[in-house]
Image 1 (cartoon, rainbow, N blue to C red):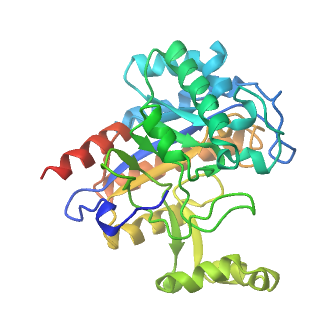
Image 2: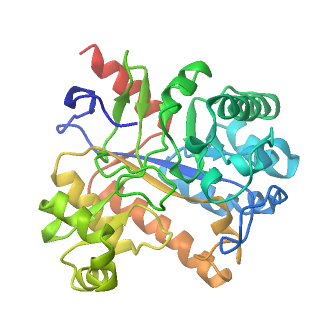
Length: 334
């Protein structure tokens, strides 16, 4: 899932910065408890309208990467289908293996990452997910995200098989668990996957920020070494702002951190940025980030303030994910 060579990375330093938004549209579950196939509630879809109103003011068309419970239940797909029909959003796919049929694997931490499943089972789960999206949304999804960023050796082949031309499964940085992929060498800017330059990877916009980020290999070791963690070195560096990991998300990242990350990558030549979060965060008590309505209000204010920053200070342009992919394809012929 990494670029095969430096020519696969999409650069255009002279252009205005572009911002997309990818929302993990998914079921509600207790993040502190084990994964369960029975977790299928999707009441949070009714809470998406307030964020949509913000996006509309800035001309941003987000992509909802919907998983099987959202795509299969009218309470889930109904509100999003209305947004999509009016041109206010795009619909992509997100594979949560534990709630996507067929259910043949043992459900748990390891198998929550699709890359740890056999190819055939991954394919059949992708087939059922893609089919239910087509049935209930009336569109063929172009964008795919592997839940928990669990892409692997089979992912490119599966994307080709099911006709996806955008992937957003890569979270740059070390593995988040011993069972998950390691994306330490992944760039944060878009790049072409595999041969033929047909599938565009748009990674999560995440990177190290701070004066020590120039020492990339060393900084990765600092944040992954058991010795460093035991000595609380990552926390010390973060408090002193010498080095910290950030992403463009209101989930666990301050507005200042997201802005600094954006400036840092912009100055380094990056021009495509991705805002991301999970749909249940707009419903109080559904994720650790929004325990109550006041948290939700602050969450939405964060989104509003970041969009204001991006479009004014940086002079950025809000785009849809499909527009970015089409733009990148056009650049190949220039």
